Image (cartoon, rainbow over all chains, first blue to last red; front, side, top):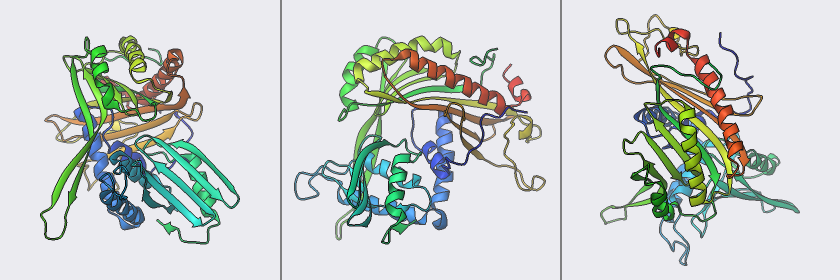
Length: 182
Length: 251
């Protein structure tokens, strides 16, 4: 019998998100890595066709894509804003895919530097905002009544950053409003 | 045989990849490093490719034909040896060293990994190491008997069907994510198959391990310690995934 590699702990439940990481082009180049990618993509695509499993997230990704199309060209704000960065949009889509179940979905907004802003707004005084640009660094800020803070987290494409999770949960835990539920 | 070394006369490794993910200087454009990187790597890696992220956009306005446009950003600069069996990548997120078959032992490549990593530091000035990842993609030719193969004979973690008398696999994809409790190192294991190839069923065993820890890019001894720890882990996964009968195929 094989030795146990580790004790299974149900903390890191990646689900389809872990496979989604394999469905993207990575650093491997062999035909076999492409075969793994195609297989993973087929499973992920199948999962994403399920409304029960992915309906809310599919809607959010569709909204994000529409926004990316609207703001693809520089000057979309009538001034000097950069066009929405394609890598930022792609990362934001992966971020939505990785959102743990039960967490509210964000609203999206373009930023003048080409980044995408993801906003969770419970009320005027309770909000969490995250900015996704063309790197794996996610700048975030939160407001909770008289308290506020900001920081930077990292997103590898599938593992949801713990600090961001805590922040969104904190804002949404006593929200009385208008989060969309996936 | 030590935990660090597994050697088989017919090793099934198709590709080994070492990724060192980094925080890169804010605002750095990878494309701007191309010329300097070509100069520094040309002697051993004379071939060059750029990997792009492409975005295709189709815009349809009323009473007008659809307009299609493509935007692309450089994701990686790839420098290949003449035989294209080895490459070094300068990526938006860091550094990669790839070795394709024939693969010897990691010990054979470590001096070159260290040399090219130091070149990468000079070229790209990474601020901090974030993740060290090793990925070994294996293709194992499982012998078919009358067009069938019993996966349990070869895999300790073989997939099963709900009605094995009536159903026959035509494909599968098994993916396991795990964490090693003692070290926090991450494990991603994928098993899938390719279409049968005459007498054999090609099984792909993608064995990926990662250390998510911050460190100084210049601290090669620390990086090497992580690489060796990951190497032992991926070897343990390899040996515990495949049965002895399977490993005998590589002798």
